[in-house]
Image (cartoon, rainbow, N blue to C red; front, side, top):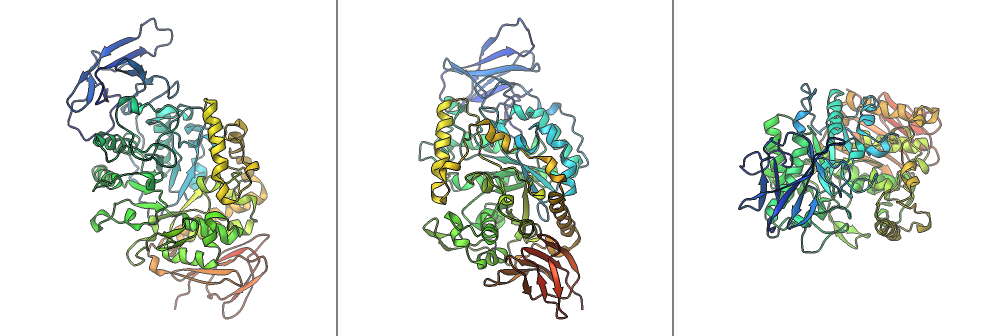
Length: 608
């Protein structure tokens, strides 16, 4: 059994039982300990054999079949956990445990995959999605997601981090599944269950930095860059000396999720923070490897970048000179919708104050596409080719973990908007031209916040994290006195969903709207048409209304607190939702409509 090597590693070697890359070490020893409770077997240390490529390898007499705890001793220091550990049952500072990913009996042979085009994503954090906070508990809620028309569930990072709860972006052992969620075996069960329910899985992964506690990679080799780091710490060595194995470490991890765990796609965190000056960027390299795996398995495999660059080259196919990623998050959509509904214009929201900003985003994908960004103090972005770039390559949402959790008190739109405004946000997201993504609980207007929480065992890290959060909010004009302590366990428990809310009348009404929107996406071809140049927008900033045309289908929105008359077609009403009742108050013979305050109306196209 190969315990530490990822699937499809780009090296032609034997299948070793234990191996690790430590190019500068003079000696590497394997430390082994039995996992049998009460075992009298003494731990053993075995010398490993060095190869010319900087890898140290060892074949065990018993084939390494028995589960064991193990670590690597580097020049007398350690033992340290395996950089490619699959399990960390006692935490990231403890020994690794062997895990055989091939032992799971997969039941998803009928699953043929799902392309992103036309799909809907549901983002969730395992620790707060259910009261249990486990993969198995999340799997029990898949029926709810099916009722929403969800095509993909996107999990926030699950890799091993120090502590009991965390957003996941402080991970240090990228190949291991956090034990508190159930570990790697539970992860396989979850993906299996998703596929049997007809839902694909997208895993959020972080390759731009490592967490502040439990990162032992520098003990093994030059994994980190000696150049400047990024916002969250040291950058990975992607382009310096000895960077080839570091890149293979990252790409191997991506392939592990897609192969060993049957995952359907990856969301790549903050790719703008990847420092890589090579002719072939890491992202381009990864996209090529993933495309090769997809061709071999016959399943669509999707790479989605989180990037604030507004650069369409990321999502331009490789054959057209781009990086070849499939899609990217677009924060401009969120900002434009958020400002139109809340009126909030502090910090990076300032440029989105005019209603025309939303109109531009809906028709051009980006707002900043070579325009001046006041928040950045410079010109930002590059235009999308509306005739050639399919709109589904942009993943959008009116709420997500960042845009909620990085607010001072982690407040959702529910805290400031009424039911009609929430319906407007949902309709623009689900029936707009892009790939929609929902954030857990928004479908019933969850009132629970989603706050930034950590559980660093080290007091100094906890204090530094809390202080850093307060400093981050200064540019947004938020009151630092109201920022919850990330280390307070109550911050974590407050962020758990309250599923009982979904059955209360006002929440059930909104949930019914989301399900109706899901039905419309499936029933009306206009709503999944990827051609951005066929999207039209009419609006009146003074009157605070907007009409989004998807082909011949119209989405009419009244942002105002008073009733408004909007020009409209004469087709049948497909959806009608206002804050306290119907959106449609009256309709003239020419088709023009009087909409209630904070309301949305969808009208079908007419045929000649």
